[in-house]
Length: 136
Image (cartoon, rainbow, N blue to C red; front, side, top):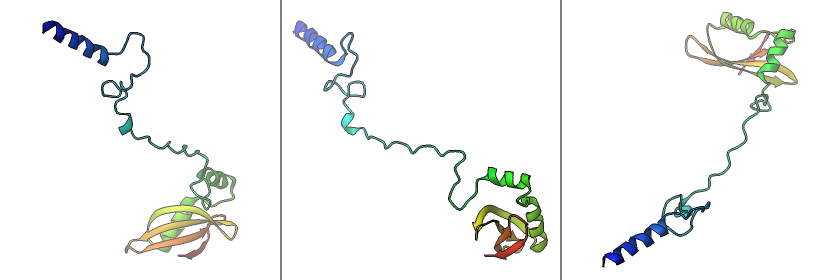
């Protein structure tokens, strides 16, 4: 009986342990990732999307920030600091966010503004001259 038990232990160890020099997983023996027992439970994840390029604009309606900076340095666009100070005199409050868009082929600043009374206004400012165009 003892010899039978020893033989059973040796056979079980041989079935579970990989053979010497065996490089690949053993199919059908044991469980776990090493032996390939969980393959049918493994979910294949879809490939991740390619990373965004740093020069790509977030949408077709927006101008990349570097182009705006170059326009301000070159004198083609009004600095945003001057636009914000003019809006501060028009309606005391603070800037929420700003974007550069194109309307009728010309660049405009769209400035979201909140007044001290809590009213939100979307100002449209000509980006070339810094003049007030209207509100939305």
